Length: 98
Image (cartoon, rainbow, N blue to C red; front, side):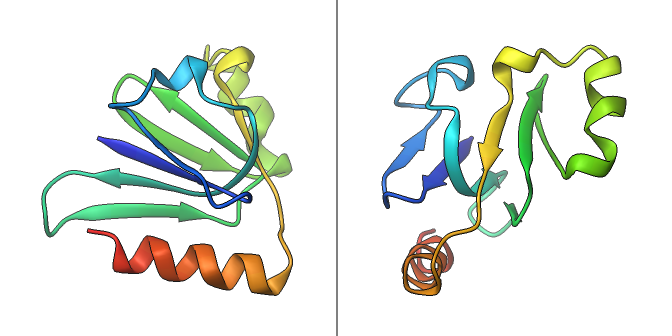
């Protein structure tokens, strides 16, 4: 299960729609939930991609490698830096949300 947290403070999960259909821009955090106690939080990256059931996050320096591995550019989500007040609010939501 994954959740994407956006800069407008919206949250979209895999229960809401497919990875391919979620908005492309404004991603602050992507969370992969494996169990109630085990999850991976991706943040502060330029790109977020999904391959099979795994989220891959990377910055400009290594995006070419991932695209060459066959990850579809249309499935790539774009992260951004947000003002501190928005970042802090969403960060708190992410780490309080279980």
